[in-house]
Amino acid sequence: MKRTPLVSSLFRDSKSIKSKLTLTISFVVILLITISSVFFTMMLLSELRRSLVKRGVMITRSMALVSENLIASFNFSEVERGAAELVENDREIVYVILEGADGRVIVSRDKTSTTANPLVDADKVISQILVEEDGNVENMEIRMLDHHGLECIDVMSLVKAGDRTIAKLRIGLTTRYLNLSLFKSVFIAVGMIIFFSLMGVFISIRFSLHFSTPILNLKSATEEMQNKNFDYKIEVLSNDEIGLLADAFDEMRVSIKRYSSSLKELNQNLEIKVEERTRELQNVLHEVNILHEQKKGDYYLTANLLQPLIGNFIENSNVKIEYFLNQKMKFEFRNSASQIGGDFVLADNLRLGNKNYRFLCNADAMGKSMQGAGGALIFGSVIRSILNRTQYTDHLTLVTKPEEWLEDCYIELVKVFYSMQGTMSVSCILGLLDDQTGSLFSLNAGHPPLILYRDGKASFLEEQDSVNQKIGESFAYEKIRNNDLKITKVLLRRHDRLLFGSDGKDDILLLSEDTSKREINSNDHFFLECLEEANGDLHGVLAAIERRGTLMDDFSLLSVEFINPMAL
Image 1 (tube, rainbow, N blue to C red):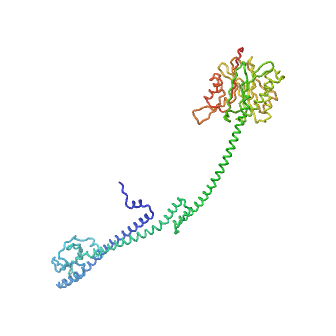
Image 2: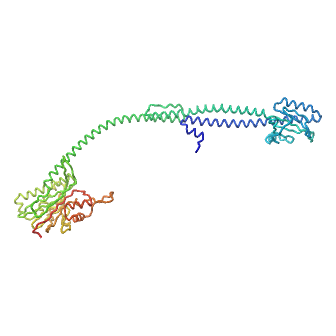
Image 3: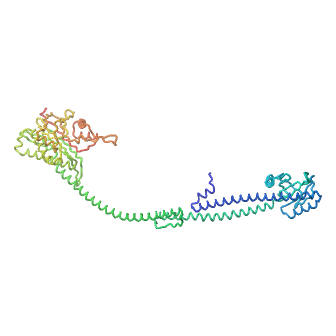
């Protein structure tokens, strides 16, 4: 288990910056005072010890000099009296002993006893002190002794007469008073530590309060701002960095208060504006819905107008007519589903001279939905007008040539659409079929070519150079003025099938495994392949196309099968 130091633990557990500052400053102050006090005590001990040694050396030397003269005159009583005075009058001197050269004790004065057991032979530290104080230590010796339980400094000096040693003088000084002085010093040092530590704690608290109070005020202001109380003002009376920070914070408070007020006002105005805008949008949406409904009504009306113009009106004939019309735009109006677009299909009876013909038409007006339907409606109306006029006008029925009738029909359509100045154009195939002989006369005006399905094979019936200009194009008007029209004639066999189709049969979005790519059909024989796959069946062709892709435009087909039993 990892242990956390005490100081680190205190800093980690303390959540107040004031506590952290107090702990930091107090720790530094107490550490400095403690180190200083210990250093002072050690220096004092060394100095006291040095002073005691110096005093012992000085006394011993002085008495040794005096003893030389007294011993030389054999006046030992004076030596003894001097030793007694030293022992009695000086509390630090425990004993004074004068020994002869032979070791015999001449004078002995001792406060305890006459015997002593040395702790050590010599104190190197004390000898070093003596060397530092006086280089002449030749006749001196200093030792530490345990003298009847008292630690003493024993100072010995040789007493000489000339070069001969006549005696040894030993004086013992107790260290008890030195220890007492040291104890007092330690006591004073401890008192100083306690006193200055308390002073340090007091100063650290004041110091921490000086720095922590502004920070706590900033914290309180932050909490008030979090509670959206922007009227709480920070009071910091210092000019230092904290004061500058407080001023900046107060400026931020004022800015936020101003911004909050403006935002509140803006929100209030915004709610009103949103309500107004919502009402406006609802009104616009209502108008759009009305317009959309009106638009669908227009679609429905146009689809109803086109409906009687489109279809198969041939009965009891030697041809089998089928058609399919799928407009891209589908809609629902008053629960009635319908569709609208530009494709047009018509099969009807027409009599020219003494022959009956079957009129066949497939057209594709330019534009989508309403625009295309408008073109188809005009085209269908003109075609129906021409058919009715031909049927009920005697002199027109005398026209015996179908080529001439097709040219007149095309010219009339071109003139009608030319007046629209290019805003509408129509591609179409107009055909007249003699259901007795199988002769087909056709005029292609910019439409996809006729397709012949014979013996299970599909092929194009027309060449590109046999196609006339679209109805509504300026070039078409020039063609009729120059009498430059192309009519195609073909003889059908029994069970031959002709297919008229708009370009929607070729505009197919092909299915692909990669959904990110759009591939549009570009194969001219795509429809032929689908027709052969469906064995010429009209609805089967649509199913084959949808298996390969998706229709993108209006799609219309007119199928004409020649079934005259008398034909080859």
